[in-house]
Each structure stands twice: as C-alpha cells, then as structure tokens.
Image (tube, rainbow, N blue to C red):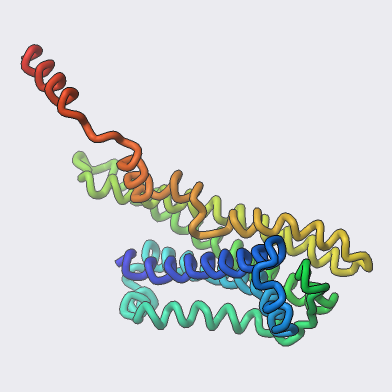
Length: 280
C-alpha cells in the first residue's frame, strides 16, 4: 500500500530535481562555455522569465511534495482505516502527480504574474529581476516551506507516538517476526530521513528570507553574491541527494555494496571449503 502511493510522488519529486539540474546546467553551459548563449538571449524576455522563475517554482514544487508525502504517511500510519486514506489508495497515480504540480503552480501563480526580468547581456546571461518580483517569489517560497515544516512536525509527532505505542505492544509479545522488525527499521529510517529533510526546508526558508531582505538593497552586488549559495541549498533539498540515498536508503545501500564487493575467486572458494572440512 505504501509503495503504491509513495512511488508516484517520489518520481515527481525526482522529476522536479531533474528539471532543476537540466535548467541550471544549460544556463551554466551558456554562461561559462558560450554554448547556446546567443540563442537563449534571442528568446528574451521569455527565456529570462523562464530562468528567473525556474528556481523558485521548483522550490515551491518540492515544498508541496514534502507536504503531500507527509500527509500520505500520516494517513497510512495514523488513519489507515479512514475514508481519506481509502480514497488516496484508490486514486490513480497520474492524478496524484497532476494535482501535485497543479497545486504548486497555483501557489506560485501570483509571483509568476508579477515577473519583471531581463538578461544583463548575452555573455553573462545574468538575470536582473525587479524588486517586486523578488519579494513575491521570496514570500511564496517562505510561506510554502513554513506550512510544510509545521505540517511535518505536527504529523510526524503523531506518527512517532503511534510507532512508540506499537513498539510497546510488540514488547508484550514473546515472538516478533522478522517482517515486523524490518518494517520498524524502515519506518525509523524514513522518520530520520524526513527529520533531515525538515532541517533542509528550514535552510531554504531562511535563504529566501535573506533574498527578501536583499531585495530592498539598491546595489545588486550583494544579491548576486548571495545567489552563489543557491546550488548548495537546492542540492541539499534534492530528493535524489546521493548522500541521503547512500546513508538512509536500504535498497541503494545494498546495490552499492554489491558493486563494491569482489566476486569470490576459485582459490578463495577452495581455501574456504578446505578450512570448513578441516574444522569439521
């Protein structure tokens, strides 16, 4: 039941990360290697609008995704027999993903409608946005992550309470199956993953607070310098963050360890069998 619901959302969270990587990489290629920079500049102001809004919109999309995944987890653990969980389980995955992106677009729409931006020149392709647009994007992203963080804290506090109560019940039973133990370990790992994700959400929240404050600065130098931290903030919040996957995802750990382990040679197998026969 969990896999049926979580996978579509996770795929769409990963799709948001892939879109961010493609957009940011294309801009870097044009900016530092002069690859397609004239073509991108010729499409302005539409290309400037696209590059300016891609970052804040993807942040908004991730914040909405964190909220939806947390809500799904809360319904699965705490309200497993409720009507909302039943409707969610029988909802088509495509419709869930479409609702995810539509909700993020609806939240970001005011900032999109107040877009006033341009490229500085065709060489650097630095986007210069108006103060109003910076304020709208900052407020939109800050509000999204504030709601997401509060909802995660409230819902996961209830999830942890349910897990602790279930653990106490299991301690009263003499025999605990391996399947139940593995499920508890998976739930604990997922809880830790979400806790770290909340920390990254708070970092993104304060990042856009800084951008909102710097929007009042007449000199754009500090705003440009502050944006140098954007790849780090965006990368930490990425769903396909390799550090998070290697430390907290069991499937990725097993696949990675299998690649590192060398297959046993014939001599090692003979030596191992000989040692067993000697000891036997």
